[in-house]
Image (cartoon, rainbow, N blue to C red):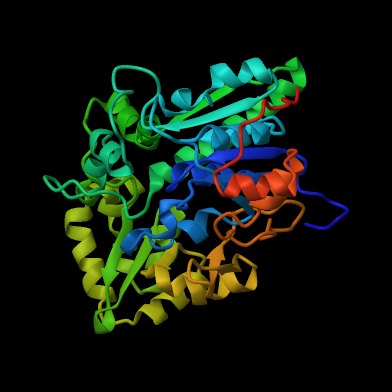
Length: 401
């Protein structure tokens, strides 16, 4: 973002006590939009620095544009340093288990007495209620919240292929923080924001809940659902390639039939409207599959694109690094991986004034900004040395109003 157009949350300081995906996503959004986000890590570092397999990309994905300080919150001097940082903050964000922050003296009720203007964002598995004692994961709430049922085939519930609730839960945490900042502008007071995996998941399946409310008929899992559109399918074509093709209106159906020489189907009175075609899918779709089977995915893509019809290649995540659109529009930016290598990472899917919020700070090394932050909140160099050696005596903090 140019100097003449500063990022919208420049000047806002966030202290986050977060790990894994949900809490770090909240900080990522605020950081990308200009906030100074200070990541408080345990002495051994955020565990996502060491995860393997599906978690090996978590840290570089969700922790750019942040500063890192390592504190031992099990020791009074670690909590003291955290309190000093919080005294300078607009927002505190956390996703520890319920009760953990209270045991540390870092809960909202305690901190708001020190700074009534503080905004406090808690990311949990469940909002307060009968389930709030349960340990939740993205997969847990997908299973209990109807999403896994809708994603898999009948009798075979399947989690979605990414951390949808963790990421969206973090997004709603950031949205709540933004709303609380605006409310503070109006009232002069901060507030607590709560967001949760389960309730986020329920929002994701709300359309299926409301389908039942509207029709009295339960929604079938997506692989066996009655689609609202007649042509809305993955087709296997020449050389075994696959491609998603759609024609979701009567106008698109006409264009589709004309483009592929299907005038007889276009004239068939049984296929006159989209709803007619939905009811005819059992016999119509096999005809279309057969008609298109000998064409290549590239040929079909070309016809659909020229005729402004919806289509999509079936793409694997690793292939997106070379996507011409993402690379041409600045959608991928250089990022430092856990082992120091450089790769590319997707940026936020938005522009402000035609510009994409980018990477100002690479994902931090553990404690990278600790000394500077401690100096800023009043520690001398000698105290910092003793602090890091675990010898400093806690001193009463000076809390900012």
